[in-house]
Image (cartoon, rainbow over all chains, first blue to last red; front, side, top):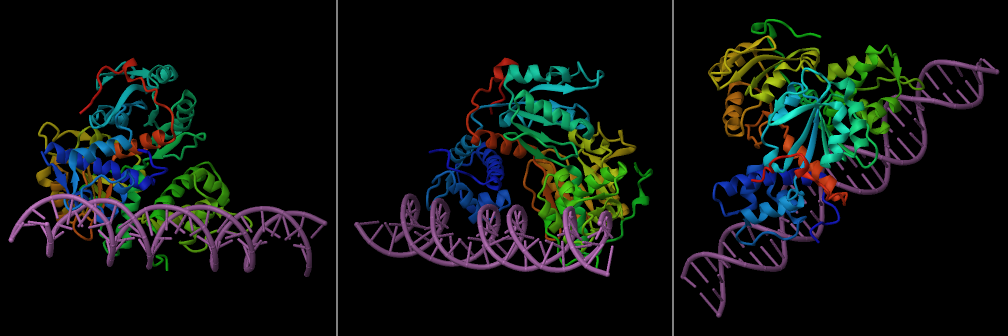
Length: 227
Length: 227
DNA sequence: GCGACTTTGTTCCTGCGTTCACAAGCGGTT
DNA sequence: AACCGCTTGTGAACGCAGGAACAAAGTCGC
């Protein structure tokens, strides 16, 4: 009953945004919100927001709006946040260290239970209260903690082998920051976050909008990082 | 002639992926590729790939496939990579420092020309050959370099003011890593990269697939970050 | 107690993205 | 020179997401 047959993936992504906005409203002491206000804060269309929320069954009061705390708890339940999720992070470079030290995950129910790196220089360091372990211990930690989410922040060359090991160890969801397209066995979800792609889309939109060829790189940049 | 009336945004994102794959193939000495092989490497449908490529006009040889270097250059041209793009980065925390030090941008035509942070402790540090400047100099650097892309890696509270200043200074494209929904004036594109949302979508897909309640956080994690 | 206003939940419709399937074209071979 | 297999490019159908408009329902005021 709480789990409808299917919720579109795009809706799930927006539900996570609504949840963040609602949490902020609740912390501010707000009791109720209308769909229009919530949609404005989330940057979406009010009708679309109501349609998204309709997937969880009726949870608002007509003429009044939505009760902030109730809606927050309802969304959190649908997204599966009442149970914490154990994550392992492979690749403790600049980006990996930033992810490991970012506190925004823990407060949302995601807990890193293992950090791994291939470099002996990194192994043994403490980041966010957790030691960096050698990748050889990956399977053991996944088995011991029952981690279901793996985050890959390694160089591109080793991302696929790491993905294979994570999947074999029992991880069912993988978030990949390496700039390669991973192939994983059926039953394992992979989501790709590619920063270069995001920038290139922005650059294209800018170019398509016409004009503005006047980029003067030489004005302040000393050395071109051409590789 | 080179710029067709409109290319769908989803296609642009995939073109960037094709470009990455093609670059790798060219470095490996490969001369030609078929749509099937390229689609497999990019993780998409072969027919969809051909339709994406059709937006740049005919660029393949029937019976043979696509010439790797030619297609690579064609895509690079459409994405506007023959001209470098100057970027400014605001917020040099863990994530910002990782972005500033990441070499993957420079090789794709994106060059950081200014790093900014509000903390005096950060100002003056050198990251990737560039000094961290106080945010007060933001407008001057944008004007001097003609930067068109701004990257926000600040705490959530100050992301909107920073966005406003970037837009007012003339930046037309903004990539936001702060967990807030930004509102920008018309003519300014904002792309949101929210790591928590990605994780929550993964968690939901995992939950929806059924089963797996056996998350044992207490095995290794010390404290549950319930808020 | 009744009316009017506000807001939700739903339905319809339009447009887009994706996928399947087929015709057109090129290279290699005999 | 003609045939055959292979691959591209395109046209059509399907499904889905997004947006607007409408009906139901609850609350506030009189």
